[in-house]
Image 1 (cartoon, rainbow, N blue to C red):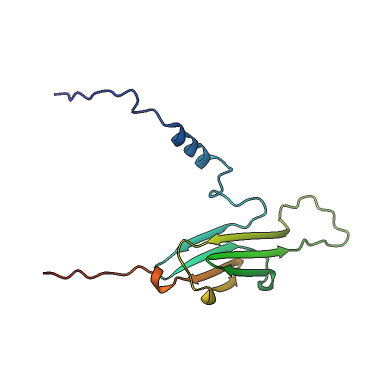
Image 2 (image 1 turned 30 degrees about the vertical axis):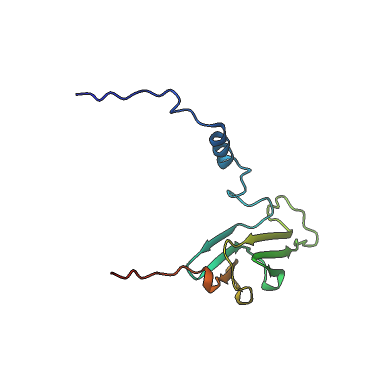
Length: 144
């Protein structure tokens, strides 16, 4: 036996807001998709204890960075200098040189005085521990 289903002609229509959101999510200008030109790729994730920021910065040295915390915003600023070998004529130069700044505003409070940064294998890793009040807590349920 076949079930009858009422056809709704508007069910398949998408609202203008949904269509624009989808268009932006699939376009190359969406800021969450790729870093802007000249900006290193960055990952940000959190655990129960901390936020972790990882920045791909091959070729930079630890003294190239200026990292600051202001309230709940982390700012990473660095400068990389172009190599200019004497007598060289470039046929192709794709590496980017100059300054960049990346900022992250953490969604919950962190201990600014306990933030640590480490550079290894071209990856800058910054760990920002959450304040105790921002950490999730398990609540025991008592019977009765």
